[in-house]
Length: 369
Image (tube, rainbow, N blue to C red; front, side, top):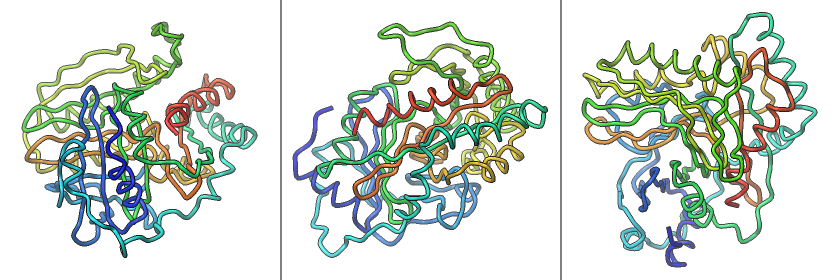
């Protein structure tokens, strides 16, 4: 993907500091970006995922809904594809620029890149795993990265598109959420009419140069099986005629994961919110048992995940839906980016290898800055 005209670069940069809400995204193995802009009114905020039933628009949902991190839907007052069409949309933004209300809490997140703190939190996670309280927990961390004064969100987006063709790439801004950029390999829910698709994605290894490794440890196999079992049971509840492929090794940037595809049919697409409420968060980003793991993470992680490990993408009950788990992402602040990454913890997990895994995952965003 080529960089667009400099006027578009400047306009998108101005939008990320404005009262407007927009999303720019590119689906895997496609060449053109899709641009959505809400020009009328404030974005709609929901306090429950089931409220997405019957809704259409671009969705950004947090890991845990709260007053500071609402589920937001950008209405498509403008919906165009490709730079030529985006060029036709550009208009002056004077008088609409504000500091985002979502750019607080930056200092709270900065210390989470500390290895010593990660080791301390890891011990809090591993003990209830070893005593059998949990089957799996997901521990995440954050790290602050200084941004050059000439940093361009749109250039970072294009860099990601060119570097990661297998992933869904997005740049999203609303006054309620702040500005986020991500490159995610994990479908939460996609499809249209009766034909739908989701995946179980868990287990991580780095690429070996240009070679895709495919010898998986028992820890990675066990982790992936837990996620697959969970998703399989939900599909049986909501859908039918399920076809399953995997697990198999799938590449995502300079990492590989174990992946299982689930293709299934839905009788009722007007209730996608109810299905999403059960799917999110999957054990891939939370743990098992789900409700207890969700509460444990909130109490013991040293930072707020915000929109990391939530979900993001286009929702349309009467057309095509493409929603992804928000992984490999960063939150943009003036002069800084906060990077997020996590990994599944099992009783057999070791601190050093889990820390290294989060470092590898953060490279996905560091490489495009």
